[in-house]
Image 1 (cartoon, rainbow, N blue to C red):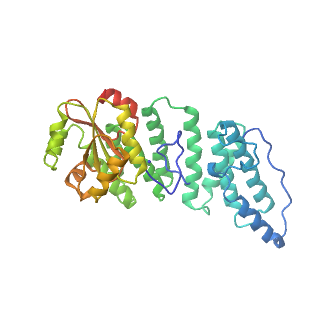
Image 2 (cartoon, rainbow, N blue to C red):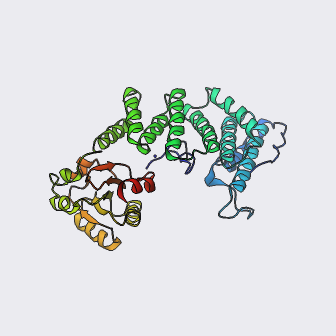
Image 3 (cartoon, rainbow, N blue to C red):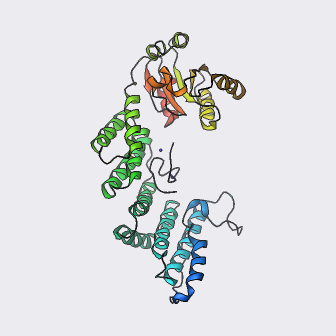
Length: 361
């Protein structure tokens, strides 16, 4: 959602903001120890508190390679869930017992996303306990519910980008309704608008405006910027370039399709995006708008990195007339301009192949 206090699932939840194995038996429940074991429990918790997250899979024993299969990931996550259950079963009064139970639920949800179905009943029971427990911070309950909802989406396996956006919009709206005090729900809904077709984006933005009193400042600001970008669709690019001090670029278009992109020196993603666009749309004219306030350094970087296409360099960077008109406030951003010279899309980073085939090629 480009964004995060929280990691995003790459495939199943490309726009859902959620905080950053199978068939194994549950752990044996151990009789609770006395308070004299507090130090031991604390030490054990230190070794467990980061479990349940994809980046902390225990791969050091060599049982799982550097590129584990979904089944191997699922197995490792269920094993981690069992470790967490073992902890709070052994130390039920420990201050971290509820957090261990919550992480157990996260581990099981991630295992389910990777194909495990053996722990579904256990996962659902945990989820209901967590979501109803008011002593668990709202943002942590949000995380547990968000990952559980991703299980449903992953199993539905939406075939098209539009279907994925429909599923993500449903999830985001449900999360906002259930957890109105958590900023991440609004971030998730904004991400849906960012990654959707113009009609859906406008509808979501209209709803976000209706939530104005609840919106986090960043969401409110980004919503206005995205709304302005959407107003550019259908406008002739030449009519924007000329008044912005780039008449030569306006003349260069000459009924050619255009890929217009924002980039910055040192921003490797923006540079690789420009190169990818050049490969994917060889017939298009590429125009790069550099957001650096140092045009000399930008020109040097463009030559050194072989940034493709014509370049617009302005010492005002993102405050230049062209960048402001285009709402190029960050990099990378990609707009697609059709052969008639009109801006046809303001989010070429999403569903790129289909859009290029429809607009550019």
